[in-house]
Length: 131
Image (tube, rainbow, N blue to C red):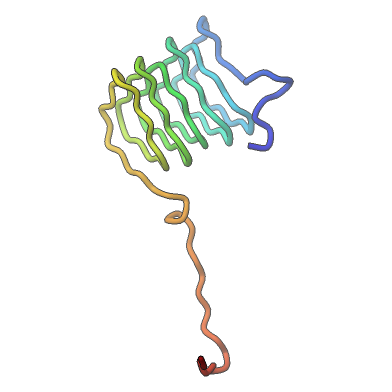
């Protein structure tokens, strides 16, 4: 993460805030309130204990204590704390689940290598292999 925090602070939605719409950010983001919509961030998503998300989430890593309904894509690691509740579809690189977490989702786990396509080219001139 090149720019995880701005002035030592996460971008955040406070516990008293309800937001409906789309969020796009290059920095880390913390949600303690409610969000309905799409959030796409290049950094880490943190959902606090009282945080609620309903929609589409696309991030690098996620630490979840609150609840999520919808589609979640965490390219790297998804960490579910004991108070977390997940419903929907999940696409992840790695999964960490604490005892007590509620995980009612279809889950696809992919490594970074599977997402990239290697291009193989043929040699223009035949080559002889020698030992």
